[in-house]
Length: 575
Picture (cartoon, rainbow, N blue to C red):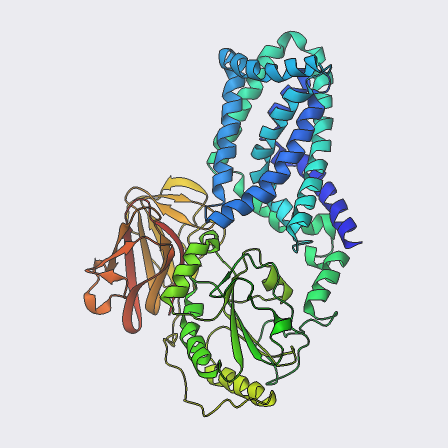
């Protein structure tokens, strides 16, 4: 029943999007398609759009994630396609060349007894699906959230969404055909006017003018469409799905927003690992399954490799693995990525090697295991007893002695001998008194900037800005995407921080580039340099967290980074 509700909602949401401003990029082509070609050309356009939209929005996006490529790549290609269509309509000779290629399909249609323009419309609609996906994507994301378990079901929802959009666009094209019959003598001028409109829309999209609407759609429209009095999560279908995750079918009943409750409280049966793309540090056929680990105590660690909070816990996990593996403890890492590049298997393998992890790590690229646990945090640790029940959990850093005590208690409860404790594990800890919160450089989650980054490429100027405490400023030219900012000409970041250590997630795949670090306008002394800075310069290559500054204690200073063009920055964290 939930699947039926989700599918119906997907169709309705697709139709709603087609009568929203999201339709602007494809409206000119839809009207033009309605006014030219065979009588079934609009149907071909609608069918092509529905199919390609679903594939572009679901499969292509996931493929980009798996390859670690930026999500805005699809958007950029779509805008270029839109602009090309517009130019083809504006320039008659170019339009004739494009139409000539499409006419080959029409001739095939005629040869097969289908001289109705369906084939050429299908090709045109397939191109429109690519153009349509970047704008409608946020609504589709809300639709897919109704059922995030299986790829086939996500694809089905994508097709349902595309069908809803195609039905509404088919109505637009039918209306366009009836209107253009009345103005047939001016059809050429009409097409040129539509072409100009398409080029203008492409330019506006390239400048990011649609992003505010896109964000509003993602945040507000689903709750209005699904449940005017509440959010998407308040609907019956979603509540039933969340209930299954949160324990009404025997899954863990964890306290949301806090660490564990009473020590060794029984929170219910532990969910099995689900949707793992690849297991690392384990032989084929020997992948961890909780059903096969009964009799052992299992620690499940949710982490992601560029997260400083996760990195600081790894030394404790290594120590517990060394100390208690032979006594009956199995640690299983679940790597659930925050950024697209963290889905890349090679990147995760490098991080595992750099941190000397010997226990199995599963690539939870689709958040299937994360969702099964209703997890919300990096890092998060869950202890499962020898009977497969969740008995302890901890979110974030710290409380290592308490966690180790829980491990020892569960081992003893299972009839194992944990041996003598050897004291707290050594490792880096967060400094006390840090005031500057983490922030992101991509437009989706940027916070604390004097001028908030907006999507697109722009010059922020070179003039110095008076910064309040815990504020940031970009200078020079940057290209801002959803989760990252790429340095261009004269790129610089100023940050007035209250912290001991300064970290920045960066990357420069393909070629190493330099980032110069200054403090209070002067080159960073070696005594204050983090381990990734030498002679005041960080050499950036792999996509990871870079340790830039360590003052030795919490201080309030202005840190400046001068980035060579091509360096991509993702997130600042402080400790």
